[in-house]
Amino acid sequence: MSIYIGLGANLPGPAGPPRATLAAALARLEAAGVRVLARSRWYRSPAWPDPAAPEFVNAVAEVDTSLDARELMGLMHKIEAALGRQRSAPNAARAIDLDLLDYRGVVEAGPEGLRLPHPRLHQRAFVLLPLAELAPDWRHPVSRRGVADLIAALGPETAAKPLE
Image (cartoon, rainbow, N blue to C red):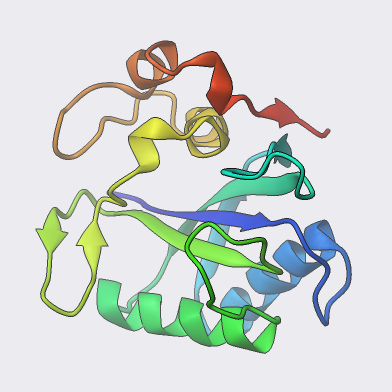
């Protein structure tokens, strides 16, 4: 079973513009011993809930690690902080956002805030479209719906388009 991480940014950070920041995050994961097996194309998606904010750059990466889900999430938070993430209001513009989407099909809603799979991944084109590139046969660990079915159920307000 695979591990999938969502990447997103719509503000520049210490590593540069959003795409450079997300590439730096992948490099930092690798430097920490997390193998990046594949990355989707880069996507752009409108900011939400304020479409006047800069567009997001998004991707999904398939990774492999001996870290458990909590350890991986902790590493991701450290990388976010190093690359300029400031946690303010929910859905605020940000220099980087790393989300643990699916950790080997584990389903968990732990008291320390770890929720697997990511609780909103099935509602987000900027997650599902790149995920479908990497894993066209992926199924949501809870609903068991396939990624193509989840994409078909999205509304037009969840648009995402490839940058490459």
